[in-house]
Amino acid sequence: MTTMTADGLGTTKSPSLLLAVTEFARASLDIGSLPVAAPLLMQAPKGDGHPVLLLPGFMAGEGTMKPLFKFLKRLGYNPYQWELGRNMGQKAIGSEGEKMVARLDQIYAETGRKVTLIGWSLGGSFARMLSRRRPDIVRQVISLGSPIKGSPKATNAWMAFQFLTGQKINGPEMRAQVAEGHLIPPVPATAIFSRFDGIVAWRNAREPKAETTDNIEVRSSHCGLGVNPAVWWAIADRLALPEGEWKPFDRSGAKAFIYPSSGH
Image (cartoon, rainbow, N blue to C red):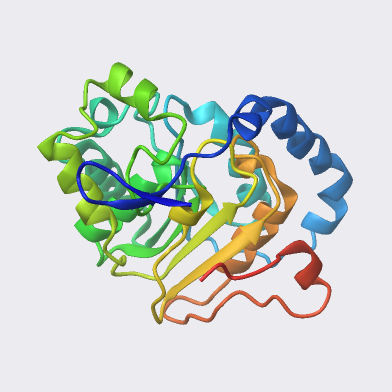
């Protein structure tokens, strides 16, 4: 159902209370499925060694990205943590995102190669922001259950965000960030989302339709997106695209049972 917020943004309602309260229980199932899927995941496309910067979700630290970090390392990529501590909004990245930009610049200076950005939840929103700050050194953006469009109130975390960061949801800075977030990234962008997300409204976690955007639907909790085998395979597929080339995710054959739709 679509409603209108005070700022005039159309938005779907936040996820149901049932999905929200079962998040951690369902995330444990996502984690538990990794050992079973490990043999298949090791058949994922191998990496070309390019750098990948991982950005954690709201209130999360680098530890939450460690399993994905190790997976990407095994595939042959050069993953990096963001080294900005817990993701507490602007407190972590700087008022204009300057700390995040500096980290990206550092990685590019060390490797001399364009960087893929992978962000979970709020980290994905920041990854999209970062791609607009440095489009010349970003290879692509992959977001996991990130609030991309609509109102920030279409999540079950907005009150905690407002309290812990000091940023007012209806304040001018947040309104500007939301408006910027609605823009299509200047680099290829893939949004991975789940209709079973208990934190972020899934309809708002999808990229707008464009020539170099895609949406990949998976069956996962929000807190399990970073440790879900289907998510990992989709990430490996996107990372394996040659630099400068782009095509939508292939959902043909047996993949259609795992990845229900593009979500556009």
